[in-house]
Length: 268
Image (cartoon, rainbow, N blue to C red; front, side, top):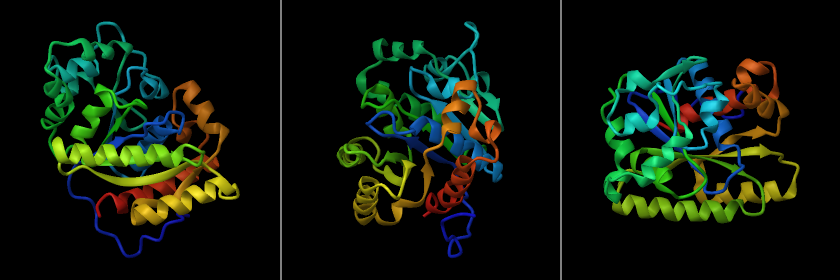
């Protein structure tokens, strides 16, 4: 059962939303959340695509995708050398735009800086609004060219947050970055959701982080959360979602609850 009461909000989302999965601190479960939330939403009938904007390609590997050398991938799509349908791969009902380490060539390309930062936005503007409900963009954990592309292209950001010592400092910095991008490159950008990852409400530090973040961000902060679960790590290692790897696990319950809340919050 969902830990979120959605009785006041039943209206379905009517347009495509581009969601950036961001956190400037690594190791918070960002990519794992991007993958499993996409599958959870697909289970609920939502058409979802994910884009791996990280040259380390953890999201691509997490879905068990091994690219042939001749197969187009994200960089080809961003450069306009192929269409969306040429590069998309479907796994577990989710459309995936895969990445490889060659994506780092974007930083060395001849594009001007502003042009580099708008490549993803310009490419996604060609996608019909009725094709998907959501397009997720998974960022690397630093403010490089790939994350900046996501900040320019996204309607909203979704932030998995771990209850550790540096969590609040990283969130404060990201909030400042959002304000800067709203002013200069993406006036509509906003933080659409913050969810606790690897959360244990019995730990004092975790409770302090929850109190601080919820008091500042209000309804943007999710009541649902992701518990620590070894099945999440094991699922990634074999290239599937936790829904396929351990369908009766607590992790699946958590992501289903988050998906319910996500659908409501992202249309507010």
